Length: 215
Image (tube, rainbow, N blue to C red; front, top):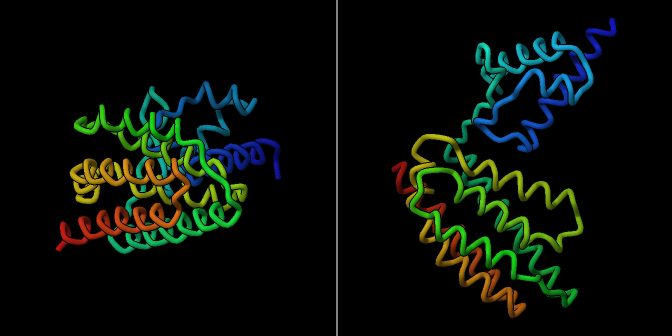
């Protein structure tokens, strides 16, 4: 294998991993010059990697601009699967904290929740970005990084860039805020039984909202 081909594969694997792990979210602009500098390679391998990623539907090449990450389509079944997985994993996390008699510092999550309230009416994705940060802070005591990564990846995949699910999630923002306020209160007191109940309620409500909108 030639050196150029190895570099092309390296560029492709690097970018694909960033997209698959949701480190690069949909609509992120990718610049050839920045990537060549970051990867310490010429533009040709990066361009060829762009072409392969575009064939796979992961990015779209924009002439004179570079490329843009595309959103992954998620259907109703995939949405429900992720909601159920998140519920199981978070309940397990709360049970573990209760057993170990550990508590979460809720100052940062409470601040993020307040910021979410401030932008809940905006059509921009700032609310969802803050929601991800909210959960990052709540999961700060999860020592199993694999579990942590799985939960956060599923959360990120719940936020499509367009379509009926996005519309329902926008309409459900106030519902989330109401239940997240209760969750923050319970976790501040290390009241894990009530926190588990609250996470079941909010996730089930979101799931039902999405199902009813499709029906």
